Length: 218
Image 1 (cartoon, rainbow, N blue to C red):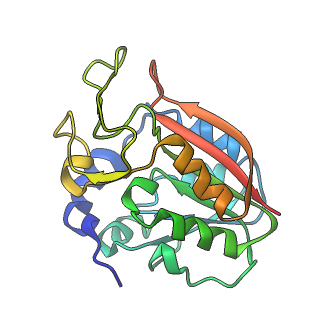
Image 2 (cartoon, rainbow, N blue to C red; image 1 turned 180 degrees about the vertical axis):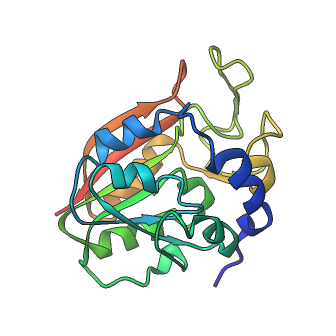
């Protein structure tokens, strides 16, 4: 199983990010818009500390999770049932779940194309894949967000790459790195897995921080 870089920062993540009471990225609204209400199982890939579980549960779904980091799962144990596994090789049967969620996790997965294919594999026909992640156009090593009202986009957006470059030392990218896909490449990952794109949403501001996509398995 691949190494989990988040093990080293799991305690910091829980303290600084996992327990924040506010929602500056509008994740709750984006999740409601795209995942919507349900009454069955929602599998969250890259669930980490389970910080999104309460929002999923509030929509009527039963959240379960998969994550590579034992350290993150230790903090998430009280929030949702989860197992340690590689999201690119899900320990889940074909066509067995009605909903899969990837929330603020895709930049941690260089093999995200494989992860999305796995999500499509385990989805029931008509099942929903909800992708919510940092906005590929306005967040990345190429984006200086020191002034949130006037984000500076530097060269690098068109280059799919892994980087630890960051405008701040208070975030995640400088600690564990992040993968980047330009917007067309990211959307092609979903359609390439056989998913049909249905709806989109953005969150955070004044320049969007988050992009969400709802896609359905035929």
